[in-house]
Image (cartoon, rainbow, N blue to C red; front, side):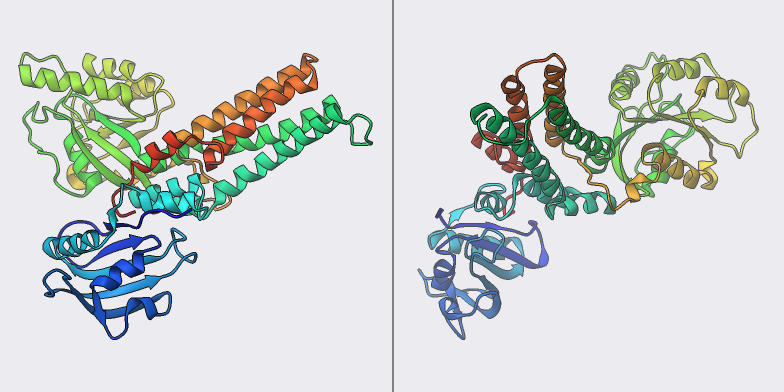
Length: 458
């Protein structure tokens, strides 16, 4: 299939050493050649080579830019189309001038994610690999990047394709026994059918085991710091971020709104939220901040509950323990450099099985232990395994959950003695759901929606 030639800026906007304008399509080389002046016309150069020259405005015949131009002919390219990349000076005026010349010469401005979309439509990658591209761009830790790279390289795709092939073979056996009973085909007994479906179900279950960790690596762990005013919540944020993001004073109620920051804790991306101290207050602004803190508390994946080693345990502290019941909590006893007034035994009773970390953030003590506790709480070392295929995308997780349910329905139907052709409906539906992950059975509207999340030029 042949599409219009598209173009876009493929590097971030702003000042830099180099910027790149990318073209893709059957006329990419021809369009670039209209503007390029160098030792040899681009139409005559070898594929996958780069050439020094200048761009000339065809309307005025004036010099527009000094460039290096890469020529890559399909199908050995990302989109499987001819691709030209124009490397120019990295400034807003320079790169926009080059893009304007390219568009005036016959290219169309690319839509968000259209280069990757063409790679998918031309069979270069499947849908899960395409989604791995955006995950790679957005990765905030080395671990998240490794998960995205594995997905881009087709690790999940290969696994899903194997499961679909097993289901397809099962359906084929069923149809042979239904439509051609006179042939000496292997009889699709209930036991054999059950074993094959359970094998696929077990593999889906194994993939879903990694879903929570994969989703955390992809989206970040929503982590809320809570506690009474002046216990050290903002100091904790600053210690984890290694920067003075939050104002720290001895005045209770200094933090009146929610402060958010991304931080990498031993490969675990945290969406760290410092909240206003939760207490009863007559101050209107502070009260709004406290309400926002309570709302963020409900949405959190992890709670860092901070107590003051130099204060007695209060009713407000006990209420906070009740508010976070059933959630993942790490209790932090701060200000251990001051006199102990806190009833530690009472704290242990309230914390139950949750870990308790002692810190003196003023003296930078206890932060390493806290980071280790966060890593162990959510990963327990399993994330280091290179053998696991992590599923991190919410769309993939939902489809795998649906697939497991339809397989369970098929197995229930077999146990109930339903006709094999009725069981086949659930097996076929599972095959279709798995196909949506890699894009074999996905709708055009969903494809458009997914690629619209990409940046221009990718």
